[in-house]
Image 1: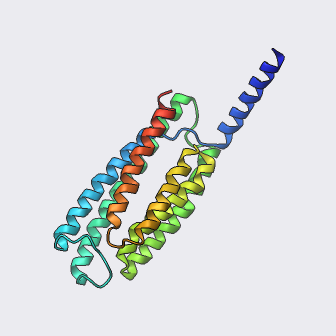
Image 2: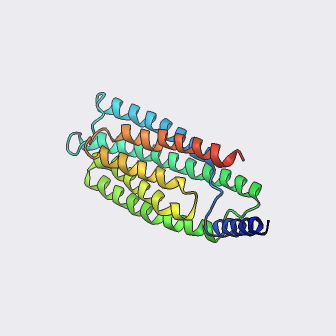
Image 3: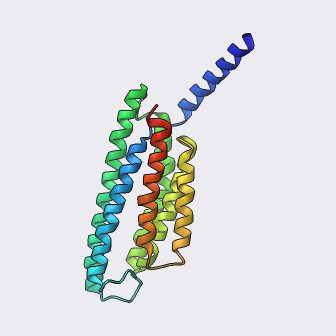
Length: 211
């Protein structure tokens, strides 16, 4: 009986330590919604590309005149920005709601660590993508965003739910594969940020949000 109580106490201590070092209020539903935002964004982006470039999926340096490229890139950038902003707002709102239900603070030491570790690869990748955009290497932007987002997830997984690591690894693999299919980055982008996010969010919702 004493051994059982001893093991239970150890389990409770371990659980408390885990909560203090990891941010556990990530919302699975926010992942699902982020995936849908990405799919809608990919659909709109695809229409712009098809309309502007005569139904061609390929965007490779030197294939289009500068004026049409500039207009299309501006529209695609706006779509991407809206998708990112909506995803961030949704994640904050739903994670905040979940944190309140769990009796936890949304902004504490663990969430600060999570944000820092997630932001370093993400910001680096964003700046790299902007450099590619400036240089005209449009076909590599989608692979780069997938790879660096995956690295951000893997890096941040140490400070949140471990399932995030597998999402990150999946994104990295998709990004690497897409480098061999330059011009079809939007297709891989939709799979990664869209379908993978929806699948990941659904699994997270089933495992953690419904308890």
